[in-house]
Length: 251
Image (cartoon, rainbow, N blue to C red; front, side):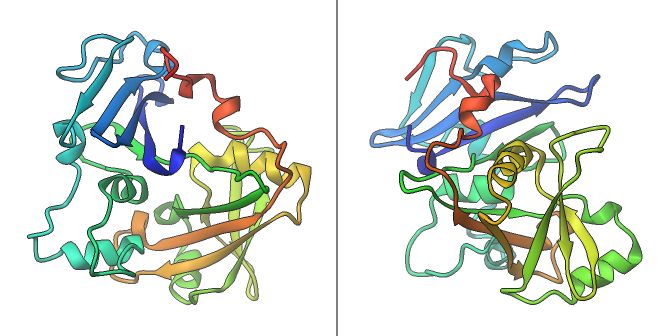
């Protein structure tokens, strides 16, 4: 699977609050393909998506499925350009932006449900890594942290600090600014395991920098980070270590 053309779908259990990876959406030559993953079987409270009643089925459509299309902001909306700018996807305004990229960057968030989309971190054959994500948890930090975020500059180096004593996620990774030092968020939960393994294998293998600061954006789109580096090509990736992300029927 070319993960550059795919996003995973995560669902939050309303009782346990735990996030399960329940599906994978791919861009293919004939349109789009959706398959459930093993995480869809992890909770009895998960409900199959409309029109996708078979956990073992492969669903193909020329157009983006309504479940995902409804999570995209219409390009006719006056705030569209600003939104795309927050996502850091407006470098080439002459070409249409891949909906998969928009879903991956934005998370496809809606207030009416508990779904979120994301791309897994891909390690290339030569060990190189490049991935973009938004810092999580900024709204829960102190006023001094909020102020520090507002003073960050594009290209500024950030530090990745494993938070091994975190009682909610032992793989959690703190994002910290330097000079002055201040916590400015956390790596998204979906990537924390991968990043923790990479840092454990070689702490100097990864770097994190400020890709974009959007002062007028909601907190969850405020700080866009760029993860880059070179790790061992044999290092196990997120997908290989997350059983929930394995397709129920291998493609």
